Amino acid sequence: MIYLDNASTTPLDGDVLEAMTPYLKENFGNPSSQHSAGRRSAEGVLSARDKIAALFGCKGDEVFFVSGGTEAGNWALKGACAGGRGKHIVVSAIEHPALIESANDMKRYGYEVTFVKPDKDGAVRPESIESALREDTVFCAVMHANNETGVIQPVEEIGAVCRARGVFYYCDCVQTAGVLPFPQKHCDAFGISAHKFYGPKGFGAMFVRKGAPIQRLISGGSQEQGLRGGTTNTAGAVGCAAALEKAVRDREKNNGYISALRDGFVEKVLSLGGTHVNGGANRLPSTANISFDGCGGENILFLLDMKGIAVSTGSACSAGAVKASHVLTAMGLEEDRVKSAVRFTFGKYNTSEEADFVVCALKDALKAIRRY
Ligand code: PLP
Image (cartoon, rainbow, N blue to C red; front, side, top):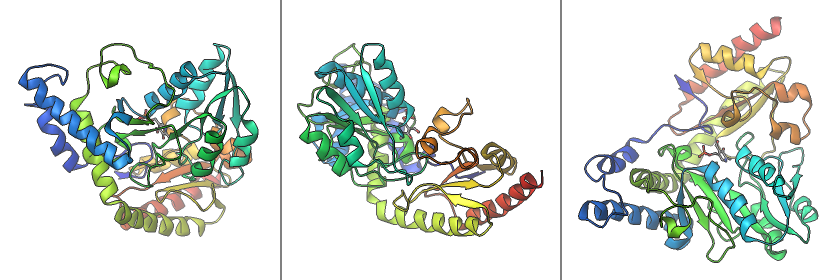
């Protein structure tokens, strides 16, 4: 298989599996238990939290373990609404459904939501956020980089706007963890998900600035300072920390390697003709979202899949129901361009031979589809 869907998920790194294995086998104790089996497990959790805090650039008690990016987004939005005053929420129109649907949920409780559109290059302008904020705005979400286009957002400026107006700002860093420095100075909270940087699925972490007004979403035991009940996933925590440490350590090497692969690929795909890159130049190194004139994105995906190539159309997280990408639509792209978009996302295990193979397969697919 040639896997060019790394924004959707990544394979587990062998070193990460090795770090996790003792906590899946002999150190299986519940980290909340008082006996030594529990304490051994608790040490793994403590060390994972400290490592993640150091990488986030925050204190250990500002790191909360969660099940991933979806939970982090839900908790931030719903928890900040419960902890704040006012009935208005601002969410960018290009957020992951974790934020968009959480905002829609709050309408049932009398909240009003403003969805802020990006410009045609896929960037949300700080001025657009500023003019959307109201006296009664409690929460704002603009992601660090978009999962469909890879476009990096001006989070520093957006954070400054929110801070000046006393609005809780959440930054979804699911696509940028290990790729860009964390924006902890500019936001009240951000979330990451381990499976996006060669860690395990079903585990993530959320930074919450000390004193930021947020209520708990998951009631239960006293785990996570009483703010998120449930037995801690020790192996998940250890794996997340190991994966993040490695990703941050190898960041420059990986970013250079992956962007060179992606750029070479894009150049060859553009030379095929009738192709357009979606999103401006300030993108993540991994991502190429490309539209193909006269082709349905799903048809391309299908023909590539038959050759063992994995790519995605729109957001894989909301796949199953095939609907036009809300991100490309919000950017104002024409319907044809939205429907013909395919997302190729490169990772550290891809090679230039694979990229060349995909270009050839694409050429065949385009010829076959455009013939009809
Ligand atoms: N936010 C973004 C930007 C994502 O790309 C994803 C998953 O693709 C999520 C949130 C959800 O993360 P998780 O799969 O950990 O729930």
